[in-house]
Length: 164
Image (tube, rainbow, N blue to C red; front, side, top):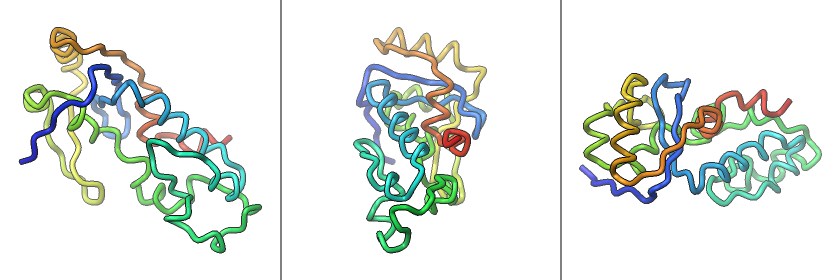
């Protein structure tokens, strides 16, 4: 059993619709990560997609995933057709982040570890525990903000509609 130690004191959380539970992320990087996802979703061609700068996430359209000769720079790009997105590996499940950002005692108290077939484990925190958990986090010195849109963006929800 690995011990996870929280890396941040500022958290953003919300209702992750894909798993219908609460998800938590590092508020210091979440907005930038969301912008990276949006930028890639907005790319119109493979050339544009390859140029998207990623600081926090891997670019699933980048050279480590596709050879430039697979898709010419001027070929139309659709994020929903990228292999890692289709297979559900990108962006990584937002519900796994609780392992890194929540104190372990609160993970144990409020969450349940759930295994998925392809993407490993995530922490399922029931929506009805939100009030208690947020109070405990704040009492422990965490700054906690709710942003459902950001959490679902980080989870890759509605990537296709971002490209519209």
